[in-house]
Length: 67
View 1: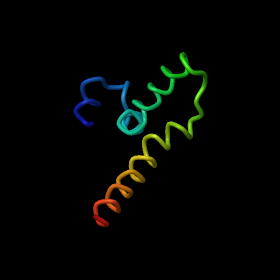
View 2 (view 1 turned 45 degrees about the vertical axis):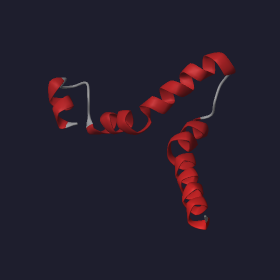
View 3 (view 1 turned 135 degrees about the vertical axis):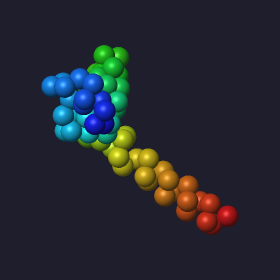
View 4 (view 1 turned 90 degrees about the vertical axis):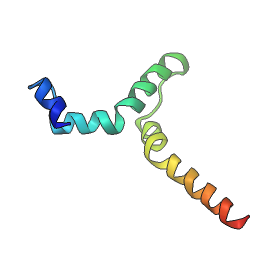
């Protein structure tokens, strides 16, 4: 991230790079889907990125243990 900040000084900060790494892709997807299906709340994007994958991993782990 430091290298990217040095390549384009003034454009990137630690905060903007952290946002790009953590949530930019899901927010771009949310915006693209909004054109086709209507608006999506921000909580949808947060859950798709941070909550639902963890729940699915827990469910798969529990399924594997019970076999």
